[in-house]
Image 1 (tube, rainbow, N blue to C red):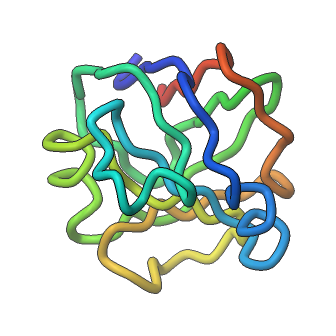
Image 2 (image 1 turned 30 degrees about the vertical axis):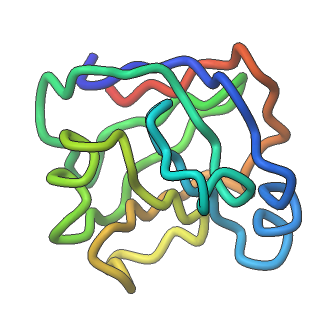
Length: 118
């Protein structure tokens, strides 16, 4: 296991963002106030290894494959628990803080669900 956290809050606009962009923004529980409605907040976690293409993301009850990791994603994840998870399966990150995933659309999430990279 490289990283594991639990969802503590879901912003008001998260599901709308999920539908229009097929992505989720995660941030540890110290999320800046002006982003709270757009992100999924989670417990603080420790990054135990770099996330790389081929790794697995377990999100709620679904499994996804990492296809690309943006150049700033690991730094952001270590410092703030912050990345954008994009569920389009592309093999190149479009933005530096993204982690690209294959395996279907983003799942419906609830407070208490786990986010785990292996």
